[in-house]
Length: 70
Image (cartoon, rainbow, N blue to C red; front, side):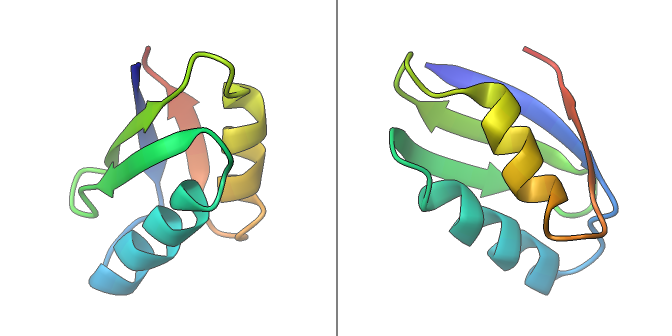
């Protein structure tokens, strides 16, 4: 499955790397790709992945606001 998030607060390559690393560490996630300029993030995952938990994990990084697009 693919899910698209918009993450507000991304502004550099470090943001991209940090979010992608956190995303890939979540069990059931096979890929996480972030466009730091737009905040568009594509998460490839198994159906069983809890998307609310993914949102919380990213927001725990402290400076990001995550919106689920579908």
